[in-house]
Image 1 (cartoon, helix red, strand yellow):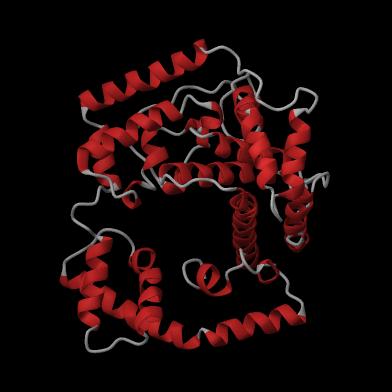
Image 2 (image 1 turned 90 degrees about the horizontal axis):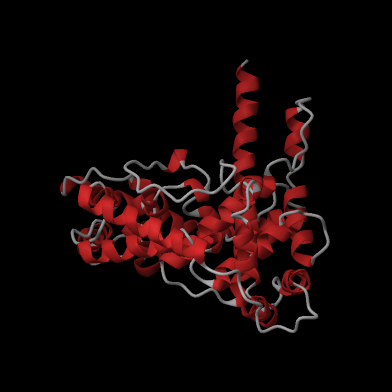
Length: 371
């Protein structure tokens, strides 16, 4: 579901009516038709996965989980070549070699690099210098927008249009520096903690880091340099130690910027997301996000837990953490943030939160059933 059916067959980002917890009859028929249409490709995908695992064993590879590494590769092979043929072993070998390219910098390489004493000391100095410069910088100057237009008005215009267009609205928010201003405000005591981006009263410069785990990541602003980079580094195709040095130096500087992001479009998206995540129905984006969440409110009733909490408790904080991770990942990959990506980022972050909550409910129901 996570690696093939949801992102590649159902594709709820393009077909949001198929991503709901409960489908009406028409949507259910459409979903069934999409799955049946994909049947041949899915059968071929399973066959290609067998070949990829066979190549993995033959090469003595033990790193990574085969499903995470090869499921989507197998689906791509099925689309390009259909069912495996006489050249299946050679094609599978090329895919496995590409996944485990010997020259590719891995998360283990990043950790080894950052734990070198000299490197760790250099990174610590770079972080401290970036934060000192940010502390000494004068308050942000007004943008090029007319002074009669307030930041909230620009953000509202962006949130009212981003699901349909929003290009001019995003340009105005970026030009005015509204994202940077809202991000700078998070340095005030308690602001980042209230937003769910830090566990501390005051945001602190990041540590260099020696350990990282995807299952135990702290809030975004509390992550070490290693924790910020280890999940993405393998996909960046860096050029050895020189590439690592450039990546780490850039991250040290980024950590001191507003929203701990380097580009103003990304900061604008976080500022807009913070406003939309109130789910108060005051903008088109907020209404759309609230509607996505309200479709999941049944899970609270299903649990029948009289704990006094509302279904949306913690949603805004979880949403902002997910949104930050997505925008940060785009920056690491060097991907520009166009206006037509704003709504996809907001909607994708909320969908991710919904799926997390759904899994938590299923686990709780399973525990209750076992009891």
